[in-house]
Length: 390
Ligand code: EPS
Image (cartoon, rainbow, N blue to C red; front, top):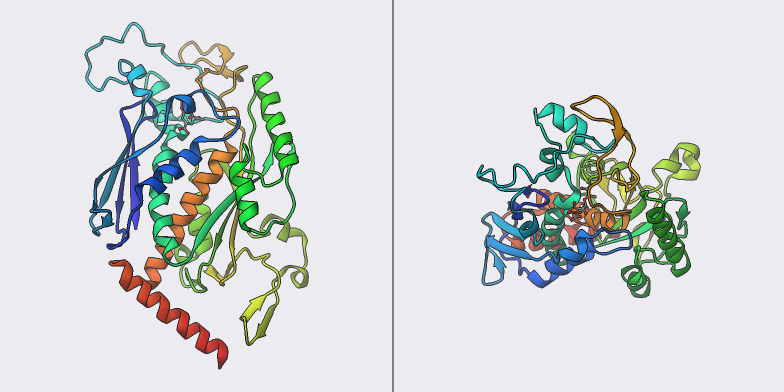
């Protein structure tokens, strides 16, 4: 399965094309819309989220609620477009020429300056319309399709926030119903109510100071079988694909799998997850420091991905910069933006992990039709069980 997205932040719509999605999957559009709504939530989101209520319009690839194996294309209309029609006009009727503010003070930390130079623009507007994190709405939609397919194999994806600025949540959690409910109810997607409140306060403090905040989140896949990915080539290693997918989310600066960062300071005998066996469980581990991947392949444990998000580069107070035209020192441009989008990024993380896992499943068990893939999957599970009983 591969996909492309298109669309400017304040253009008419976001667009997505998914190629290679298996046929025969019952597609629940309400579920996808709920995923889009989850991405819009969270304390720290900006004014734009009050305007949008993202909904997908399917254009192709689905008939009578089932995928038909042909490319799926979809639109997510930007409600805000009506307010930007002149500025985002596709034809050159010039009606907005005089009204439009030319943006020339690049924001440090954003694509503004390099994009302006690289594409020979004369207005930073042409950079920021596509470099905006608005694009992630389309990715959550693609991820929604992937999640629907993974659910048929009993694979579920969760996420929660582990840090907002200085406030961190370090506890180990069990992904029980009650915990998941708490995450979904928290305004910052953190399972601990007290820490959630502290995180929220920190975001509001940052807002009052005209500043922004980053943080960390974890995404977990439960139920993936052992043997997805491969050690045989660099680009077959699931680590590399997952890391690339997470690093492609705007503002993500670091990714680790399992106890990735802390593995640097622990000895081998204290790090690796020892292997056990009993009749009931087959091979199993008592720990999961590897985060469910060894040798570039899933090992049957939960896949645990951690990601670090930098603070949003747009701030009300701005940062020191240089006007591209006058070369004089100034303050970075101010666009409407989020104060903190870590909770939203965790939902985007769920989407990109779902896409990578579905890809790896299709690689191992087949691509064309979901029943065929399910049959191959069931027979592989049987084979693994038999081996474990030898
Ligand atoms: C976003 C939409 C954008 C921003 C934000 C994310 O809408 P607008 O630019 O109209 O406010 O709120 O984008 C950024 C933080 C960014 O740097 O571009 C969205 O839908 O997620």
